[in-house]
Image (cartoon, rainbow, N blue to C red; front, side, top):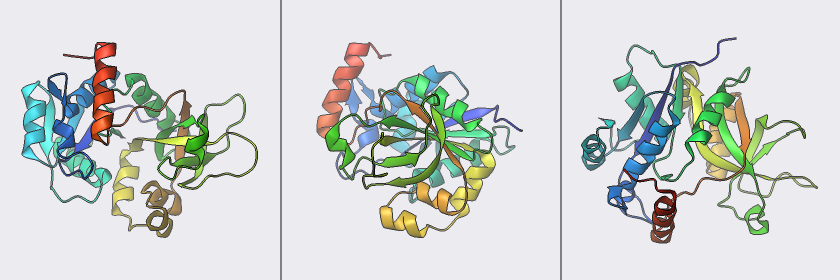
Length: 252
């Protein structure tokens, strides 16, 4: 089987945000949040990193630190669409056969998680890979903002095929529940197919984009990791991220 061997990390970013205006440019220890995300991606050391920008200010912030950024249309409906446009611009000759979609609001992500996601994509039959972590807090099991991934993992395995994703508490019965982590890796052909698909019935019902791929028969492989990376969505989250980065010494 062909194993994806030439990865590229793309980070989609735009300024529009309802809960935290201009979120990618939010200051964390003297640098914009998007720069911290770019640094974590560079630390993964698996291939080039490009920020797919919906706004010139984001492009400027990345270029100021020597990073690579490319402008895309401002009105893309999703990060997947944005990175697909960026991919065509930065790699028109299709040298990269694996595309990692890293969210621009994960400034404290452990670079090892990016590498794990890449490894999972090399599972036989995988079109897309992503990450999950076992839910340990009781309140998260019923929280609709904590997306649950349904997969069957045997005791001695940490990688399995996703059967469904939901905001509901699923599956029922005794056993672990898994918190989905929004980091994805795609084969190049899978990304092209995915963005060309119309929104799925279940996708629109659950408001979960990944269900489009499952409805279309694509295989999503999940790797189970120990922790959920901290995402920044609110001003309070931003304060926590600053404290975490300061404590870890993750500065320039």
